[in-house]
Length: 88
Image (tube, rainbow, N blue to C red):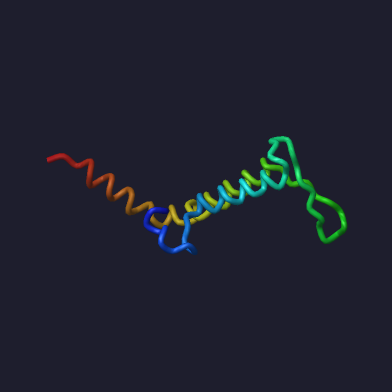
């Protein structure tokens, strides 16, 4: 997909954008897997953001749209499987 979008810089795939977010967060945290960053919240307390929590968030962001669309398209998947399974 990226090969088709390489001429337009503003277009990229979701996986590529998530990879860039993970790389920038790893570089800002020192590159270690046990490293963590502290983000100031509005209440004045600091919250810990770890690479594991960033990965978990990215997993949810990538999977929720698929989970939301699948029930509406399921009948077409079943119809295609049924049509392909019929032997004459």
